[in-house]
Amino acid sequence: MALEFATLTNLDTGDRAEALFNPNEYSLNKDNNYAQVAVPGLGSPLLQFVHGNLRTLDMELFFDSYEQHRHGSRVLNQAQDDVRKLTQPVVDLLAINPDTHAPPKVLFNWGGLAFKGVLAKVSQRFTMFLDNGIPIRARLSVTVNEYKTAAEEAKEVKRQTADFTRAYRVADGETVSAIAGQIYRDATKWRPIAIASRLEDPRRLPTGLLLTIPPLPYRDPDNGQVYA
Image 1 (cartoon, rainbow, N blue to C red):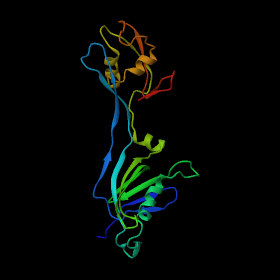
Image 2 (image 1 turned 135 degrees about the vertical axis):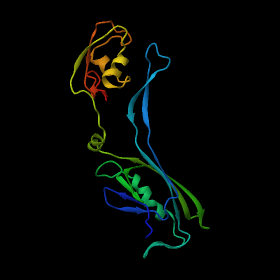
Image 3 (image 1 turned 120 degrees about the horizontal axis):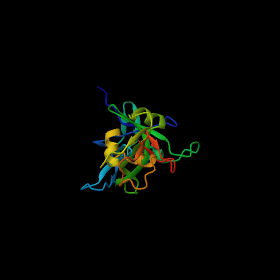
Image 4 (image 1 turned 90 degrees about the vertical axis):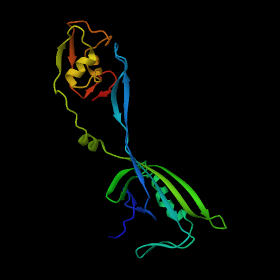
């Protein structure tokens, strides 16, 4: 099997930066944000999902121009060239495209991983020099933030809820969070009920009060915030 080299492709221009040596490792990171929702009578707050954060790709790329290197028949560098000639195509992916007024979207491709994003950070560390100070060895720490269009995000996220607004009469001792758990199957999604029902104090529900249960996702009519 032929050796495959990792590449970073500028999706605006099609230009490709090729790794001189493949990374020894890379890390894919993903996390979510949660808000703590205090509910009277409970020993600890409930967690309410707020939003997911960007998936990121972190890796270190190694470049060395002490000797001549080839990929197949292609000569990548002459012996003792300035190693910045090899690292600059990666660094250039941070530059702003004058047509879009933003850095380009990139595609990292290696070993079956195709990661589309934008280059968020490049840290260059030069570790070997010629007598005249020209660097000939470098390590680049690279972070790529995943990029998705709104259409791609909407296609992946599936939100399931009742598709109609309904009324609900409060029974003795019920709380907004308990009602949200019953209707939405998630007690942390009580805010749409509180907002749609114009509750002045969501912690106190009079028995017999008629609540408005909106479908999800729900947009706050006052500030535009969306609850999903």
